[in-house]
Image (cartoon, rainbow, N blue to C red; front, side, top):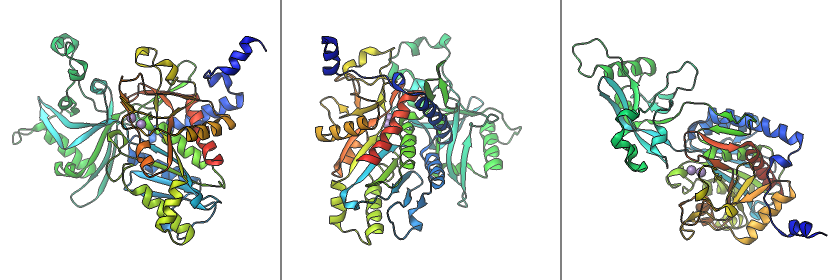
Length: 468
Ligand code: MN
Ligand code: MN
């Protein structure tokens, strides 16, 4: 053996996925990503994602658990929580007390939410007040086309679903920004102060009614339009949930179409691949579960976040529908034997900003599924640190099934940091590790992922469900 051969055997080197794919795998990858782009276009909010997931699940033979009295090996069911979470299950052949294999992803993404009393008129224009959701860089949300998605209830209790700005002929909305000619003061501000939260107002109209009786003539015209078209009044906004999201569609990026560019890939890239993963599972030994949760971007709080009891209650319901009952001991035994892939995006090294990464411990777009033993900030604060045993176990499953993977931390030590649902899953007393797809421009209106990594995430979930 030459020194070079020995060195290659002893040293670790990450691989580029594209260099290692067969022609057949290339084809599968592109097909998967065509479907992924459609999924992104159809699910720009957590509600839409849940609806789309139900549609896909039913096509794959999943039934609503509420319509099922007993569960047996091979059964496929789903459970919905408040139209914003979905949990899917494929019942395994082993005793469920041996543990389940769970993959969890989130389906909320950073955006602008309308305030409860949003509509006002200013300078002969009508605008909507917003309150941003999640960690955004505010300047990225000005001067781009925006769409309006959400639900609004009329006084009579009729639910109106809004989706404006997605069809070719729909109007879109926007947040206006200051012209450079008059931005002398703005441009010398710190970036964080450049655009203020209260200035993220949505332009919604500018055509006044011809009337001498009303002072707010543009607002009046918009109210008339909303009433005629949707049967709603201004009061109905008080209870509404309306999200403002980028209006553009998911696109292939690059001459070689090696990337997907789209809004909301954090974390719908993992949601999509998790769904495709559980759909590919047939007759698993251990029960396979997938959960898509809301509110991760604001701390996993609330009754639709990972911190809600929805997961525990649904797991207990599944155990009960398999075994006829579910004692505390049954539940506890199941949980402590279970394992979870907390499936969320990582930060891919950005060639424009290399200095914030420590490249020996960073993820690279195109180099596969990324395992993150821990996340957190500063001294690993607020992190779930997966054990060596568990990281080894998952790494081996991935290796044995031809998955190309890498590991990473989120940037250099003390550069910043972040968290995921992993710590809350860990609190339930099961093994969990963060893993997912590296993303460029994370949290921006147009995020970028490598198709190879989307494909490897999908392969990872299938391997996990079938082999742990
Ligand atoms: Mn995320
Ligand atoms: Mn995020």
